Amino acid sequence: MGLWKRIVRVFVCRRKSGRRVDKYAARLYPKIKLVMEETKPYLNPEFSIYDLAHLVGTNRTYITETLRKHNTCFVTLKREYRVNFLIGLLTSEPYKYDVKELALLAGFSDERRMCDTLKRYHPDVYNLLRSLVKK
Image (cartoon, rainbow, N blue to C red; front, side, top):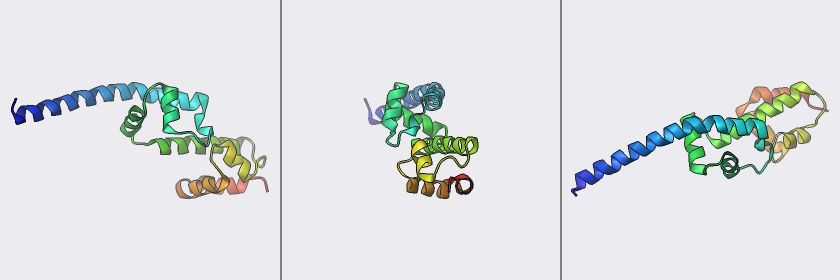
């Protein structure tokens, strides 16, 4: 088999497998969202992409590819769920928690990491936190 035929054959195989990944990603993304919303694994500070892959029943590569197809990554997905949970806590029961309690409840490893994350990615939520936290 000539070199040209081998190159074309590899290219065609990669395209076919890419289509398979697209179909699998279309079915996997709703499953990822369902697991994140129902079991709330992001509340664990040590939650990793491997934990999500285990909960969904696939491997890390498929999780990464699926999230990439939806213009996000695991860290961003985890951060968005944590921030939304934090907003829910702040609006449902204002002045009940201090910053340290909120950080632990929302799944951040400590209050400094939570505040840094909010300042960098969600300054409006950081301002809300400062106004609705227990003094």
